[in-house]
Image: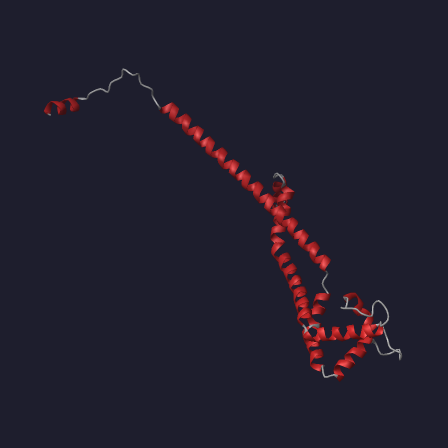
Length: 212
């Protein structure tokens, strides 16, 4: 077998081989995947901020609401207090008597006649680009990627905790074995003496005692 084959064979014999391999894969790809999710979320956040803070868009929506209430006068929709996002698409489909001019055309022309060209320019310059970028993204896909990233992170944490527990048990076993070995060695080298035993006196000690 080659070096790569021997490596795969050796690692496959390790306990929970696939779990550790999956954890390593998740850990290696975590940074790039997290950056991609952050960039997508930032694009959506920028688009939302541009829409909410746009004075020109607010003016357009106010005009659309007024025109819609006039068109729906005498019906339950004639006194609307706001515009639903889902209904905005109808303003490019609903046409006047000439079968050419849409509600959007009428609103834009009315704003231009009233001197609101700067507001329309602000909408074009600050909203179109970030909204177009965010429109290419799928919120559902971002949520799936985030859920997968969280599962991968949980797997890495689980493997790390299991490895820490194994290491602690191994260190405890090694320490206990070393302690037992030292205890056995001390027991063999230690000599128990009887209580009647007295330390012998050597000539030098006797001579020193006599001199004193």
